Every structure is written in structure tokens, then in C-alpha cells.
Length: 193
Image (cartoon, rainbow, N blue to C red):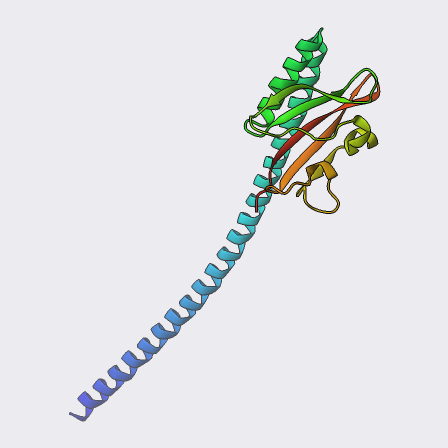
């Protein structure tokens, strides 16, 4: 019986030792798995950031390419237009591609350059005309620069956008003919909050 007890005790201690070794192995494997998953997660985050950066760059490049294609198409279309109505039609079609609902008008100076005449409403519908009575009163025409105004009621916006109605945003692009600024392409829309 003493030898049976020794065998049992030895067997129990061997079994306990094996269990302890197994536990250490499982703990080591679990630790290695945690480290492995952390490394994988780090690489996955880096890959995701790289992918997002590539997609953003791709979208920006596509938008730039689309703008270049549009400008080239517009230039070729204007070169093909041989009369004022054909030019206005080409501009109307181009503005309709860019803005479907926002009102866009083309104002051109009369022969004396003392007054604006609305050449045509180009796109959209509703009120959207510029209230500047003369080319000299329009900042875009007077300075030969494109202006954008986020809120027509701000101090630094065009005075012809100031209204008691809803605030408006606007983009005013000078139009040059033969090197002389003679008009403005005016887009106006209600400001969004």
C-alpha cells in the first residue's frame, strides 16, 4: 500500500506538473495570440488609412480631370458657335450641366458700357438675377476677378446681395470679350444654415 501511495502521489504530482505545463503553454499561446492580433490590427488600421488616402486622392484626381474635360468641351463649343445666339445657347447648356436648379444669369454691358443687359437666364428657375445696374457697380466686372459670397448680408459681401429676405450666397464670374471685361455670369441661391 505504501508503494501504491507513492505511485498515486507520484502520478498526481506528474499530472499536476503536466497540467501546470499545459497552463503555461496555453497562457504563452494566449499571450502570443494577443500580440499577433494587436500587430494585425495595427497593420489593418494602416492599410485602411492608406486605402482611404488613395481613394480620396483618386476622387480629387477624377474631379480635377472632369473639370479639365468640361473646360475643354466648353472652349471647343464656344469656338464652334458662330453667332451670338449660338454662343448663348452653348453657355446655357454648359451652365445647365453645372447647376440644374440654381438660377444663373448672364449680364452683358451695353455698347456704352453704362448699363447691364440680361443676355439670357441660363439655368435654373426662380429669382436669381443680379441687381447691379451698371458694370462699374459690379465688383467682379470692376476688378476682373471671380467673387464668391457665402452670405449676402455680411459686411464684406456685394452690396447688391443685401436683402431683408433670406440670406443668399452668390458666385460672380467676370466675362471678357476681346480682352475687355464686359459682363458677369451670376449664380445666386439661398444660403443654407
